[in-house]
Length: 316
Image (cartoon, rainbow, N blue to C red; front, side):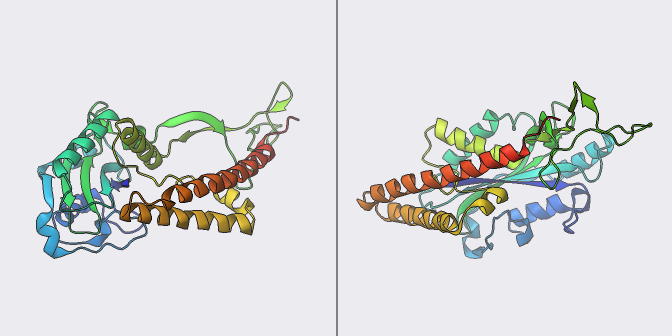
């Protein structure tokens, strides 16, 4: 069974996609949608799939914690007090999507504990206040929406990016052509010339931020595995068959077809397993995927190594 975790940020001002910000009522609108008081599908966090709500089943939705609207006023006042920019993040949502579950047998209380322990495990619940927690049983898969304030109670400021995407080690800056950018003299008669140290050009460095959404999902996957839950947040092989554009372009057509084949084969594996966990063909399918995916990954590593050699700076 699969459990997928999604993350969405909410800024104070309207964003470039014309989505309302906190100062213009997005949190109250999000809450009304979660409570099915006013359905608005743009507040659903879904990936490449259309939201279909069965309103007859909405009576089975469960509110673990409802939104206290005064909390929105608190967030607005904190934004003023801390002089946080209006394009900053003031709140965020997490969606835990539990797929392939029987709605009649699903234990909400047990999953409340699972989520509570996970959020405590990564330190999120100690920093950010939970504003709303709602379970939806009226869509294709069972899932829950958790809305949080983005105000870090330890740092006493809005610090969502610092939590999800802290800066890492300094790395050389790479331009659009894949070349390392080197430091140059800014002023004086040598302006525009490369700065040299011990006769070598000096790369410009930049601290890259962690991919917050990816980190969150990886931590969730580790948590489920560590605690022996029957869920994973990724399919075993499809999750490995995700490649950067540079690697994908390096594949020949035969390898690309193999990637599509193994993705479809894994779908067949899970469909067969769901219908009959003891089906004798399951092991054969799994073995075929193990062998085939290993070949694809080996080719991907070769392409990546070749790219790395090209990106390695030559010492002048």
